Image 1 (cartoon, rainbow, N blue to C red):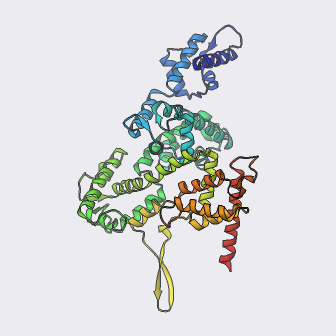
Image 2 (cartoon, rainbow, N blue to C red):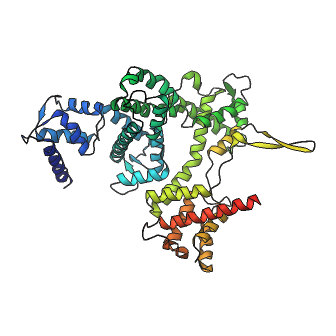
Image 3 (spheres, rainbow, N blue to C red):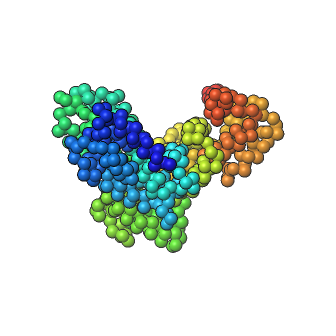
Length: 496
C-alpha cells in the first residue's frame, strides 16, 4: 500500500514537470522532483546519483527511469556513499549488541557527530522515527532522522542567507557569517573559519559579486562537517570550560612543562569523589587515564599532546578527556532517568520544553568556580580574595545536576492553584516527598512527574486556566505566573 501511494505521488509530481505532456522530463528536473518528494539534494548528492544511475546531464527521461532514480535516492536516504559510511560507522559506535540505540546512546551519538540538542528535542526526534514503537532506534530509523535533519539544515541555511542578504557585495563579513552559522545551529569554530572558510571565500570575489547561496551552503556544510572533529578533540567541552580545567592543571604544572606526575593528578582529584585514597581506587583512575589517552588519540590529537599509555607523565589533553569520562559516568544515570520519565508522562515536545524553562527559572545554579572567593580577615577589616579553582571544584561544577527545592515547588504549586483543598495539599506534599531521594530537592525528572500529577489529578482545578484553548499549556502559564509572583515577593523581601 505504501509503495502504491509513493508511486502515485511520484507520478503526480512527474507530470507537473512534464509541461509539454510528451512523457519526458529533463535530467535537470530530477532535482526539483526529488525536492517535492522530501529530498532536497545538494549538488554533490545529486551528481553522485546521476552517475550511479548512469544518467547524462542533458538526457531526457521517461517516468520509469525517474521512478528508478527516486527509489535509489529513497533507499540511500539521499546521502552520498561517503556520508552514509560516516553515519553508519558512527551509529555502530554507539548501538548495543542488538544493533539498536537507547535514548542515552542517541544523546551520545548526536553529541559525537556535532549536533547540540536538548534531551526534550532528542526524545521528540526519536518519537518521529520510532516506527515500530519499541522505544529504541535501529540504523534505518537513524538514517531517516538524519535525512530530516539535513532538510531542516537546508531550510536554516536559506533563511540565514536571505536574512543577511549575502548576495549583495560587502555583506559576507566575518561577523555576519559567524552570526548566520549560529542561526543555522553550527558553532562558528575559530580554527575552521581561519583555516578553511576564510581562504576559500577569498577566491569567491564576494566583495565584487556577493556570496552565492551555493557558496554559503559550501561554507556552512564545511563547518558542520569539521566542527565535530574539533569538538571531539576537546572532549565536547566549551572553550570556557577548557580554560577552567587548564587553570586547575596549571596549579600543579608550576614550571609549565606541559605535563604533571601521576601523584599530582591524584592530588588534583583528592576531593572529587573518586576513590583515589585507596590502592584499588588509584588503579581504577590509572585505567581511566589510559582510556582517556586513547580517546584523545582517536579524536585526532597528536602523540606529543597525548603521551604514551602507562606513562608517569600526564599531559593536559588526556586530563580533559579524563574529566569527560568522569562526568559522563555521573550524568548517564540522570539522562536515563529523564528519558524514562519523559516517555511515561507522554507530554509533547513543546510541553516538555516549556516545563524545562519553568524548571530552569526555579532551579539552583552551579557554583561558578571562576568567580569564587573566600573570606579574608585582615585586622578589623573583612575582605575577600579569589579562589583558584581546583580540578575537583571544576568537575563538581561541570557535573552539577540542577534541582528545585522542595519548598519552592510546593509554593509554586499552591500559588498556581488557589482552590486547592487541605487534602489536596497534603496529597501533593506526599507526592513530592515520594520523588525526592534526599534533601537536595527535585531534579527535572521528578519535577515533571509532579507537574504531570498536578495536571492528571486537576490539582486545585489548575486545568481551568485557558485549558480549552491550549491543553497542557494554559495551566503551565498559570504556574509560570505563580513563579513570577513568588520571585517578585522574594526580591521585595531581600530589599528590605
